[in-house]
Image (cartoon, rainbow, N blue to C red):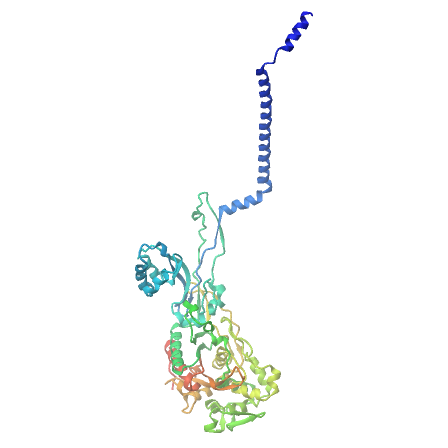
Length: 593
């Protein structure tokens, strides 16, 4: 064996070094780790690129919107409703702060009895009642709503733990129920639900639209609010009503309703020249500050919403129609039998049973004695169709106001039915067989007072600034002449006898040294069950025009279901009281002799 062979065999037999194997193993592991790190870095970079792509490209619009929302604040500030004033600038409706008192007995540091005794005088409640409420639960007890600022201040000065005062804005009516029938009320959400508060909602509500403001880096927005953000106008709504007259009217009506135990009543005072209402009152009524404590049927202004048969107060209107149509003259005379039959139906005067017929009488006497038979004879001079057309020209079947909500249109038979029977024109002549709202009758008498023009009754004068400048006024229809001035003057002159003649039915409306025209009315009510006229339930009314020598004002009083009496004994004294107040307020001079 040569030396090379021996060397090779020797090398083959020698074992490999463990350090060398470890080195190779470590090198392989390092490469694996390096690949892993590279993979992680590449994955991270890919994820970062993907994330950037999503943020910058895919989600850019959404993220931009989100950022803008976080940087902006949407504010819808509370803005008080506009004030309402009467014709003399007296505030009759406004917004003001109010408070709710919550109790959290679990936080009381004094006994419930002690706290109840301290609160009782302020809240005008008994300590026992308050203590009982405090025992109901440990937190969130509403103790009282509608607290005034004065009451809230007194509670704060007690420094009692466990009491919470929450401020809010509410509508406040300083005169309480005085104007309730016209103003209506505002609900807990600040929206008008009746009267002018409802009909003039757009003018009264001056809420600002929602504004978007940018928030600064420190989250402050005060410095970024525009200077004119909460700039409010000083405009107020002015009504045609007079607080002094409204108070006198309500007192007179309330007194008469209590005296006669009547179901209800209403009084309207209208300026016959332009249709503005100086007063409108319904009794019973409610306090709009606490409307929720009253029956909902009191919320409606029944002088606008409810219909009734006007009875004899419509007779002067029927006389004016006949005069204007030329079928009678102011000096025409008719024979009053006391009772007649029309198409088989008996028609009698109210006093027929004890006065019988009055014989030959003129138109003035027909009105003075309120002769139903005389009125039937007058209207019978006209063709039924012509009479019906006149009724439609007077607006029967329509509404007549523009700013008082929920008015009910007057109710009149369709023409074919009216013309079919002579009974319908006959009963219409003395105010039965059709129905209208009191406001509509006042409007018709205003046409007699103003020379023959149909005007539009209204209570809203306009929108004025603090300097008295008109920024908006109510858009009224043009007056429509329906009667000639001579016809209107003739009827008003005849109506004076109702009051000033010794045997006139409206004698109780007379005022010394003043010329007044008027007409009484007593109408039977239709019963709901039979549809016929009741023998007991009646509506008494009286309408007056002042001063008769230069007519300007119309006063209508309607008393529903008094216990006994007639229009001349129940409603006429109310009109007299109202006119006495009107004379003083408006400075109406006595009639010249």
